[in-house]
Image (spheres, protein in one colour):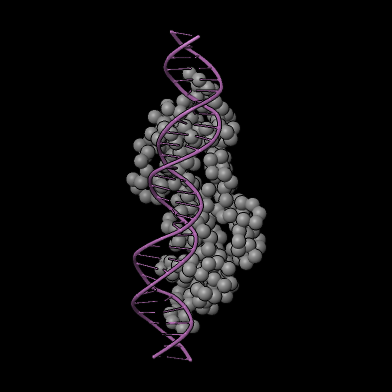
Length: 135
Length: 135
DNA sequence: CTAAATCTGTACTATTATAGTTCTATTTGA
DNA sequence: TCAAATAGAACTATAATAGTACAGATTTAG
């Protein structure tokens, strides 16, 4: 249905919650509580975001996650890509040789353009802005 | 992965192939041959597009489908909506009361804005333009 | 008036992606 | 040393999508 996955949605909710207090360290449990999202998913997603360098971590007691950069410099596109991989409406704009119908296809470059425009939309909004009521 | 379904992709390929000769009547079998897509899916998708009024049909021998309107007036957004339902990145912009975490959510109106922008991108390109090599 | 080509509609199965869980290991602070 | 926390991987369950099948209705050609 032209949608992001629930994981991306959660990831944006989580980082955008963290952006309220960017220097703080938040534990998974705490973030699950604040956002109301299921703890195991929260833990899983935070690990992924750390793997992409969006979050910094501190292990052990009093440890947790915090945003690795300024919240206003982290875009929605970046979060989605971290969790889902490259943003691509169709296979043909993801890489080479992924589509069986490539020979008959005359739409490839058009898809690339549509895709780039959508990427621009998602890059233009930061997780900090996702917190506000007016975008 | 922020993608349209294969059905939408097929639907755009099909209508965009038909747009080459907008007044012609094409049978399912013929379109499957031309595009190289699997016949049963082609037949299924064309029925759906007819149900949404995007295609007109003629039954019986020498029957088939043709575009109900000018190809330049049929947008990619319209095709996707016909096949997948409303374009919505998240549940919260699809209707009311669909999200369990609505109380904690401060992003709803931001999502609505992102969503509208993406809808605009997909509305701005016609199936006729999807045929060209330059968008 | 019959046969073949074509759409109509629905129901079904298979496959894949996503969501969500669980468990063990490692690190750190008190 | 113990408890709180992340790290990492493997696993199961669920839901969405892809794809198939079939009986029915309509139209044209002969």
